[in-house]
Amino acid sequence: MRLLIALIVLSSSLALERKTFEGYKIVKAFPENSEHLQWLNHLKDQNVDFLQPATKEGRQAIMLLNPQQYIFTKTAFDSINLSIDILYDNVERHLQEMWKRLSKKKAFDINDYNSFEDINQGLDDFVGSCPSGASCNIENIGSSTEGRPLRVFKISKSGANRKIVFFDSAIHAREWLAPATNLKLLEAILKQDTQDAINLLNKYDFHFLIIHNPDGYVYSWEVDRFWRKNRSPNAGSFCIGTDLNRNFDVNWGTDGTSTNPCSETYGGSSAASEVETQALQNYAQRVGDSVIVWTSIHTAAQIILHPFGHTENGICVRAEDHDDLYRVANAFADAIENTYDTLWTRGNSCEEIYPTSGSTSDYVKAVVNIKYTYTPELRGPGFNPGKEAIELSSNEIWNGVKAMISEIEAVEKL
Ligand SMILES: [Zn+2]
Image (cartoon, rainbow, N blue to C red; front, side, top):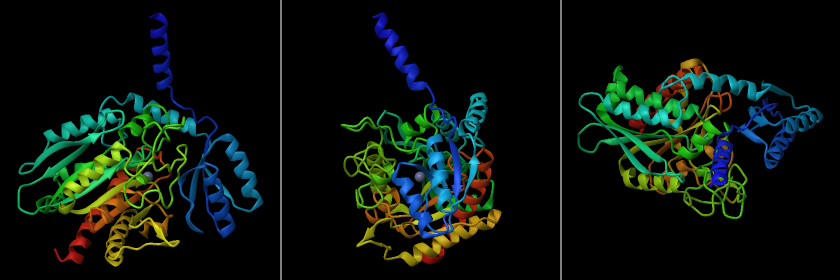
């Protein structure tokens, strides 16, 4: 019995030990020609972790490199005259400062990053501060692999044929700025302290899934800050997790996904094999007819993407209503740019970043038939910007969302 207790204590203490990023660097590269791009894509095949993908010449890529990868990469890049800038010289030192700050934080704080537990407390408290004339409630739309709830916060008003504006975030666990920004959008609607927020809630209901991948999110807090996938075990492999944004039942297993369970883009054992995917698919099917726009928030590349991600005969597929999607994406991105004079790319996701399949956005577009669906890749840098990024990100996305809805109304003559 004593041995058993010792083993349990040992395994639980091992499980809680954080992975160290001592000596890791986060670096930025600007590919200027096709040879540079080829090299960057080669590194991706070698399992180098790209925090911002290498997509086009003249567009920056950001990588997380362990000490060996850095030496190899620096030598290779020197030989082809591709220079790299070091954003973080020792990632662990940067993370330690953040963990120190966060360990002092004792409760939910909307202007900082929050644990899964604190976010749930924050959502519960938000129900109690619902604006007059509206109703607020939380629906559990399913459970994660490890049994954590997937909670959709709904703010609604009574009235016939009201449409839903939907936001999800944290399908990729490490993209902490996404749920932080999503929470600020929720707060903007809930507070009703601007005329824009009042007008929007008078017209639409708002649904927010702040944490789509709770197991991965908790793991990114407790063990590995840069964890992306969910935490579901894979038969026949020591590697854990599926990339939920390659697991949706739409063109599954075709473009931009991997069959290797150790890959960051592993699409799962079959279409919608993961309970987190199933929960959101079922929810989308249930409410889809009422959704006017579905936005899945990611980080970090300063891009507004819209469907589709996949290819046919090697060519990126555009939706039939591509022009409408692109027009609204332009309004969304322009309003963001005008907030802090930044530059945002916009367009078809296959054309603007790379081919993908099995994403949330493509599923709700192609299978649920929600016309407008967007994937903002928020500002960075990388997946671990300081807490000051939350205010900047939420201000620009709030402006973007208002412009997006207004442009949809103009196109659809609503
Ligand atoms: Zn992502």
